[in-house]
Image 1 (tube, rainbow, N blue to C red):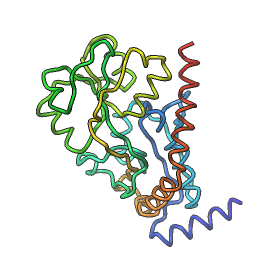
Image 2 (cartoon, rainbow, N blue to C red; image 1 turned 90 degrees about the vertical axis):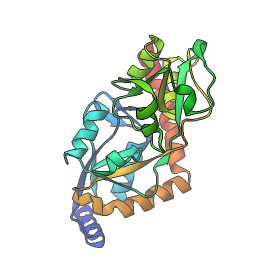
Image 3 (cartoon, rainbow, N blue to C red; image 1 turned 180 degrees about the horizontal axis):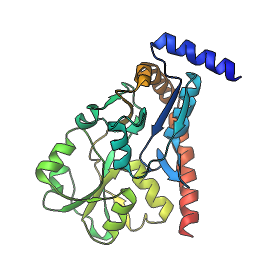
Amino acid sequence: MKLKALLLALCIGQAYGTNCTQLVFSANPNYPPFHWSERGQLVGASIELTERIFKELGVRAEPRYLGPWNRVLRAAEEGQLDLVVALKITPEREAFLAFTPARFSSNPMAVFVRSEHRFAYRGWDDLIGRTGLVARGDRFGEGFDEFLRSHLKVLTSHSMEDGFANLLRRHGDYLVTGYFPGRAYLAGKGLEGQLEALSPMVNQGSVHHGFVRRSPCAALLDAVSERLRAYEADGSTERLLLQYLDRWRATAASRVE
């Protein structure tokens, strides 16, 4: 079986002009149900689907937990990784990551507030004059990053989890983070009655896989993109997200208890 896998990897490499037979990838360790860390291991919908795709391509893929999200991005920028999975495309990241044309999944961004401190919100302008919270390393795309820098006062938390904790401590008026990960986190922690998302969404963005440009595995970008598109089209990606949402709720609830 090992010889068969090696021959398959060599054939894949010849077909795509690369000698990529093994690959190291990482992700944000606090972004359920897409991905999160569990006892020092990365788990989640993006982790399982990425491993499945590279198995199909004959490439040995190792998910590696590196600690906080900003450390993951720094490792990618320094060429210590081959791939970062399921993240927003921004000009800053495009300097060192080549993103798949096909997305991994939709990932709208939302404004979360304390339920007893809701405010009128119709769009970005209604955040001006309030103190916001964001997780270190997060980028939002579709012009919101530029708007944030130019018009908003925000405080940076270490992670989404810290951001929600700071929101509960009244260190800010709102937190901007992914709608699905945010809802998953609140459900798992039993906080849905205390914190909630406002409507409309900040944007209707998506997350893509980003190959480190200097990695030889970047030659597989189109092959991976084709499979991401196929898995989203046949419903596999959504099924995995729902499956890992249930897993996150169960493990989070056990941690609370």
